[in-house]
Image 1 (cartoon, rainbow, N blue to C red):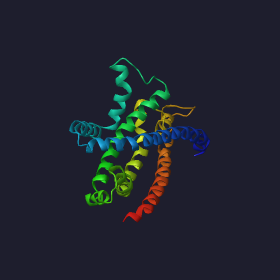
Image 2 (cartoon, rainbow, N blue to C red; image 1 turned 30 degrees about the vertical axis):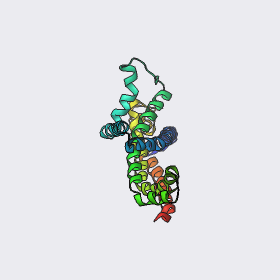
Image 3 (cartoon, rainbow, N blue to C red; image 1 turned 135 degrees about the vertical axis):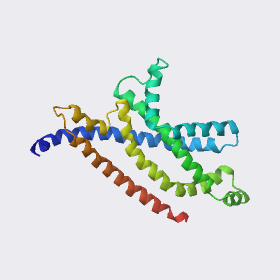
Image 4 (cartoon, one colour; image 1 turned 120 degrees about the horizontal axis):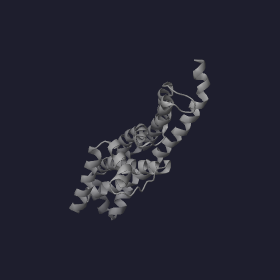
Length: 228
């Protein structure tokens, strides 16, 4: 116990650095995936069949394969197959590759949530908007979009919380996020070797982060109750 107390400041500092990397990946993924998912959903619902089929095919591929495989392909494929290591070998390159893989993956999942939310709005409301002289863009932004947001908050909340935990998969390409930082003390890091407790301690970070997100997303859902 005394040894753990001595090691605690070193471990906490290292885990904090790793968790900052985790948070960066989380926020970058959200910023990229939320708008991209909406664009993909428009493609899936497009009346132009080649675009619709292409969008649905991409979504099928991404949703049907593990995120870990996608990370490996995005990071290693350019260098090993195309002989063009566009990401480089540093931490910044690994972070960029992980961000691209996560954004594409979650955008495809978000697109299906968007599509369900948009198609769930009664057609009669669009017809009523047309009768009132509204354009299709006005109907979408003033009627469809607002009601869609209310419908998609619960499934989006679930995906966002899952994203926090999925960031741990980035260690497969040696991105030094919090799980990587905790596992490093088992192999030997900063004079500490064979310590497994830092790895278990990372769960506290995830629990706190997901707890905060659960509260915030729950409040957002309550604020949207006026659409009922």
